Image 1 (cartoon, one colour):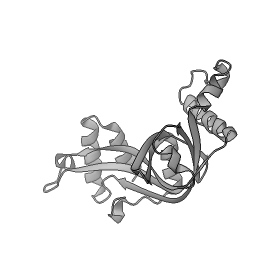
Image 2 (cartoon, rainbow, N blue to C red; image 1 turned 30 degrees about the horizontal axis):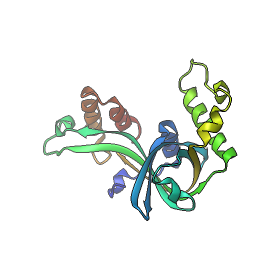
Image 3 (cartoon, rainbow, N blue to C red; image 1 turned 45 degrees about the vertical axis):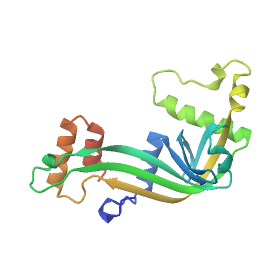
Image 4 (cartoon, rainbow, N blue to C red; image 1 turned 30 degrees about the vertical axis):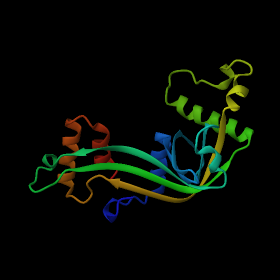
Length: 199
């Protein structure tokens, strides 16, 4: 996380809300085979626990059960030109939002894996309204069992939350908002919105 205290984000509920909305991240683990990362969708099982699944032949899968891992969720990010600030003697930078979760990982049994998969698809399907929600009831007989043979489910009990909210908080408000306008004019509305509303 960024060492500047101005960019430290302590609002746990806001971090959780951002992570839940994105629902995708990178799981990092140092294994006997070297460091590995898996890119995964996830769902919150409760306030301090996430669930995810991956292919059984994923290089990280055989090392996860019982390990401590790092899960990173990246929010909006973007280049900030010195010209955006409207004041002299600035330098280019990159603004971004990131949440890091650290915790112990354990393998799920089949019932928990099915529940996690259902919760994940349901959370995403609700975002597609007014489209009718897809459920596994639409799958042909035997397809769920076939899918389950190829994946493992895991949960992480989060013990540490870390986050960076680097959005120009070290600048005067008018200067930060000017930079947000510049980012939006350059086509990065997501980072501009974060600069205006998350600080």
